[in-house]
Image (cartoon, rainbow, N blue to C red; front, side, top):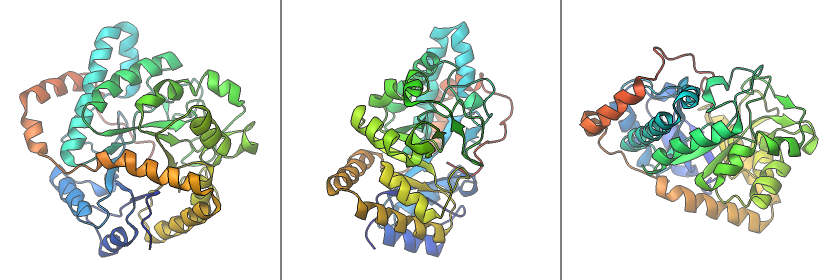
Length: 362
């Protein structure tokens, strides 16, 4: 089996199974994304990451650590406010908000790197919209594209200094969706021109700061006959790659989400063909991983060779620096400067974690 550099997989449990070890050694996917089901303690998390690192491909380790409702690691590390909490603060005290956003980004990256996690599927660049499905809601950095750009930029400045990869999501913009794409396909009756004026603004503004961008399973009724953005060559290849000259990796949202239809094989094939460099298969089921590999292979065979080579080279060039090994998380937690910054950020956080709207999805 050839290495599947276009694949990111998930695991079943807190420890690698024999079947997963065999698959990681044979298929050598680019990454492994961790969910709550894989994380019981910091000690266990480091042990799991070290075990993954010993497999043949030494894949990058991915996670969703946005803040607020979406934090896969919810104990021992910083309890981050939701992005919208920062937006509210910025309306009252923009200088303090900018400083705290930088600090929060820096803390997040430091914690993840100490654990051996090299890729964070954040920041959310969607714009909060009144009347939309709450799946985005306070995960957004603002309710206007200028707010999102300013606040996400401040967070990114801190985060990027730590050497952990950021992935902006969900392109071309999920904030106005009236449905949750984890369950069904949201459809926006907007043209590409309308999207560029509003939803796509944060992505365009921050593209040069983002090594990766994640797609939305959201359809524009006036673009590519209403195909989900993840399957839209107009949005991913013609707009993001060709027109915007985006040089980072394009990553699909989780293929198993309810917004997409068809087999896992077909979902993967359509995603890669549209312009995704990497696809996320987050079920933890080996049969799904194998089906996705078949779909990837079918797509690559039908694509122009120069596109295939460019995608493969892009993945290897961009992801290579983010194959990090666990450091000393305990030393970080005991550091007085870290503790002071953590207290400042946690003072803004909600008392209790709200229910994660993404469940076990990416």
